[in-house]
Image 1 (cartoon, rainbow, N blue to C red):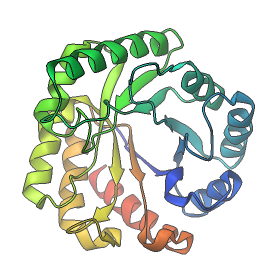
Image 2 (tube, helix red, strand yellow):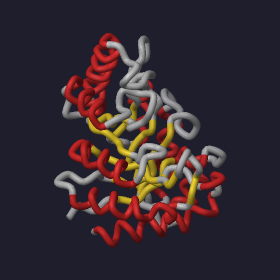
Image 3 (cartoon, rainbow, N blue to C red):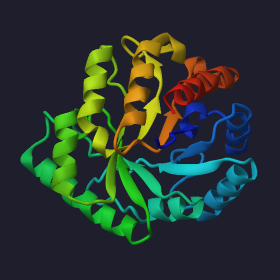
Length: 254
């Protein structure tokens, strides 16, 4: 059975410098970091990306991905994103599927977003980098059917998807959503928000996450990473316990 790596999204602690994020992640016993492109590793600054990459590996951690805010919109250039990802040593870049939800999108929205993602995948593939869709409301990857449709329309082996539970969805609904796209999921964003986005401790949705991670671990193509994203009050002091909870679940399912 493939081991899923426990990790951290750096956006969890936007208030900390990248070097501090490395320190708290290492102290918490995590293995990988997804570096965010909003603050810690800005796109188009490969020198900064290289510094963050070195700090990560020096602490015994690995860079698993680059969390970009590329949305495949008109006039957007993915080159600066790929420059930073390459300097980080990240072989996966998180991207967003446009700026409108699937039910509001026109045929032109679908065609344009798919075409831009197809071009982005080609550019990323040329550097040995894959792209992964953020599974999120307000984008074309906001439900399993829309995510699968977009993956099909893009038609690139370089494109995978992330998964996270839809805010407000009951456990069985969230798990069914995961099952529907599981074959395409390369990483999971792990958090416990309930019921309207209130940030709970991870263990407070143990019934969901134990089942979700067990399903992920037993999938024919398991996600590579389970990444903690956000903690109550953005408090770094909570990370060690949250990481221990996640690591315990992953060890159980190994």
